[in-house]
Image (cartoon, rainbow, N blue to C red):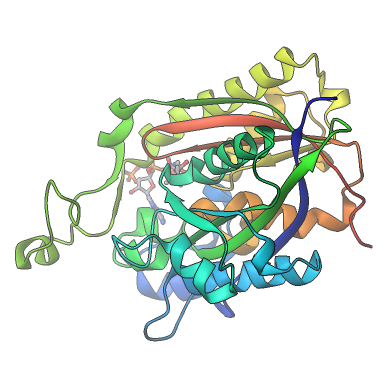
Length: 333
Ligand code: UT7
């Protein structure tokens, strides 16, 4: 019997309705539309409004769309992994809440935290469960309500991030489609450049931490940028070389959407033409764990069975990696 691989057999996505434009940000902090577009490529991002709505709200919407599109009964789902850096609660896991809401009553579910590389990590982990032959339907969700941890007085971070969610279905395949190879890395030495100072066990929430604005994303942008440019490009090239893929043989780069300049550098190192690079940063900004599945959702109709996709991400931790996927189905027109 041929090897079992984990094929992506469907995609679902959700972004909130509210659009936070560069023009609106110009009124909130000392910035300009021109600066934001030229330094990041971002024109607008979505923000989840509404009392009591957390990351799971968007995850549920994305999973419901995925179940409907793939005509999957939620009771047939074996496992839901939610990659998120902004869980609804410290516990229980956001994936538990999503599974309950969508009626995945026979599944088990848990969260993964690897910042902006979380979806990549979760996709690889989900694939391993399929490859054992024991599990047949796994949903991987990438979702973040970044607006809940962004300081809208800090012009260096508030212009980048947005809210959104996406989900994929993984199923066994014996024709060589799906997750073929992956290279994942992490380096905790990078934590000093990108983290949230308070709210965890090392520095629990207090009046002081709130007054000091320590519950927001702290990012040394230039330092993160340098590491991201080098590592995302290198790891993407490495997964290509290991699988004897030249730029000609890669059909799509699915890159984390943190900064268009990082994406361009990665594509250049891979020797990829611009039209092979999935890009929606101008519409959504950096949705952390949402970026990769949101790209898939936007480009799904153009994807064809047998195409070679390279996923790549870099984020807090530091964490980074690249995954080679052979696409399993023709996207709907
Ligand atoms: O997804 C997780 C991983 N994160 C990333 O990959 C993000 C990586 N970093 C970046 O994308 C970029 O570093 C940023 C977009 C965050 C910043 O762009 P940059 O070109 O690296 O700017 P910088 O931080 O080096 O700052 C350059 C100047 C500074 O002014 P001075 O000191 O030169 O006078 C900043 O104060 O730009 C200033 N600046 C701004 N000016 C207008 C920073 N933010 C803004 C702003 N509007 N929003």
